[in-house]
Image 1 (cartoon, rainbow, N blue to C red):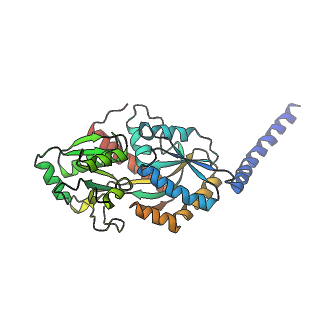
Image 2 (image 1 turned 45 degrees about the horizontal axis):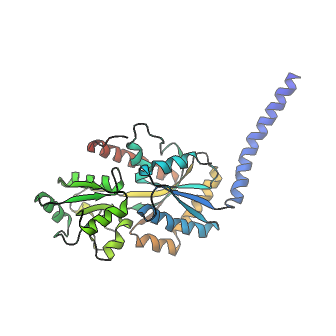
Image 3 (image 1 turned 30 degrees about the vertical axis):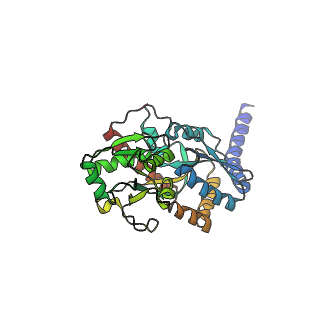
Length: 327
């Protein structure tokens, strides 16, 4: 009797092992059959939100289901990352993975609540988000050299605005100050929109911020763009040189992509990635990304993982050098 029971259990276990991949394949075949939630770790109107909506709308057209934005701003992106980590791994929850929320925010925690390289499944990187150096147009600053000289002249006020302590604009600005060997008072705001508005109003004099947060003001003449953070010139910002032309080796840009909750079936991940790649090639998405001065850069999971890991190393060094304290 015991032998028969053991055999029955073994047969049942084998059946489960065989049926699991079959079930996953079946789920992928019907996927998606309802709307997909896209968790955005920033407020509406932010650079991350703008780009997420451009890609999300394109993805909706490709997959035939609505991609619903779920903005979960707060704690520099940690809240959104934790929600995504705990979500069901069924392919119906995506997370907009960004430099700030996925790598920088956790560096400011004593006990990090998540590890981007271990707690999520990587889907695809779809963009490289360059930062643009902008100043109030009333200032006699038209180049990186001008800005550094102005800072060293001792004229005040000369404040650097950021989207908040530990944000991409904060760290990129501090990295720039280190490279240029000058001082400028850091003034953190609650988000990219308010920080850009402060430079427009003259409350702050400059900021180094993701291009989507600033380009509409630049095009309207309310800000002057004098440089950008890619290590090379880009046709997305004609006439705006890289900071590296003045400070050789300077390179501090961000990235965006999609994560899924850990354990999402590979077949669903693969199907979703193929849809994102197709969406990025559509005229509407290309136009939207170009308007936001954001480069389309598509990388598969292994390549994307390396980008994230390298970003963690770079930002950890910068956070330590600045003496930023963990919460």
